[in-house]
Length: 454
Image (cartoon, rainbow, N blue to C red):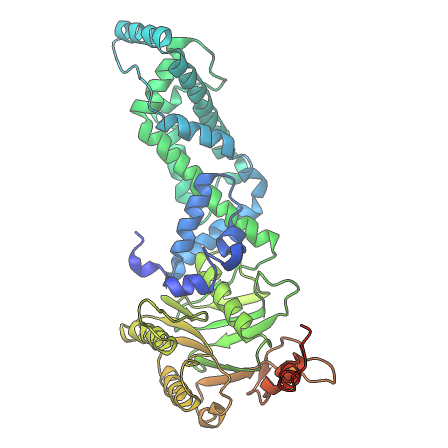
């Protein structure tokens, strides 16, 4: 039985930062990226999965085994009912139409004749619905007896077992193996089975198709993008990955990540545009996909599942709520601290926090937070900052790993290789960027009264 403790919790700001269901300017979301489901029901169940990733290692492994099985027997899963057939069967099941429910043979025949004679439009809809529903059942019969699917793995095993049991229900066994003809009594008997006696059975069969469709979508995304299934470990929280990229970046530069209870804090520095934020999103996205039980955008990855995943990347103030930018930052830090205090295994990513206050306060706040993060067992933290002055105070803290990105400073414009390096950045490029963009030149021209051509 799955409980709330088996689910990885992501709050609203984290869902927004990772663009899981919403993205700015109509851009592709992570759900759009992962949704290769054939059916609308499959897409809905995939969304439910993405709203509640696993935090339980056994649950993740169970999903991984299902994904691996699908990848190994992909052609067999192409024989699931089509999106059109399932949609028509579901529409028929939900449509409000008269039904002949009499059990007595004579009474049934009279009722069937009256329906046929007096409700021709409904009868036509019933015929189509019965034909599509019977077709779905015949397709499922052929699907489950494939030799390749005799021993399904992981999550698939109970789904197949239940599907086979439902197909053996007495009412369902009355569905013929050939296409249903137009004989009214036979059609309406099947209609009574589908919409009355086996209504729950049909609803569950379609649900099982959608659950398999969602898992097939996860497997197809894994194969399409050459993702790898990470190794799920037990023990204290940790994550190690090689060749890590963000799936939305064209021509990405791969990097690694390595955090555990020896070094549980990553302190990340480097100039703007060098890759800090993209790196944080790449790590968080890989962890999120890994907790779903599907492949991740890396060449290799191992991790111990977390219970809470926090991201603090795209914060904003709240004018109507009277919350300043710095208070929004403080509340975000409080949310992380609250989860830690409640004993959850937490992974938190903070991108240049405390920008909403003066440099002195930002330094003091960052140092105080980082020193406390370093002491929190069974938690991991990624913390990016422009405050390179912190490096002196952090150098004696063994649990903090310092990494940085840098920019190339040739005679032309700045260049970036987006490669993660060991240590702390020493680059100060604010003036350089302003000069390259011609800001000072424009302002100097303006001060002399010249007319600007922009």
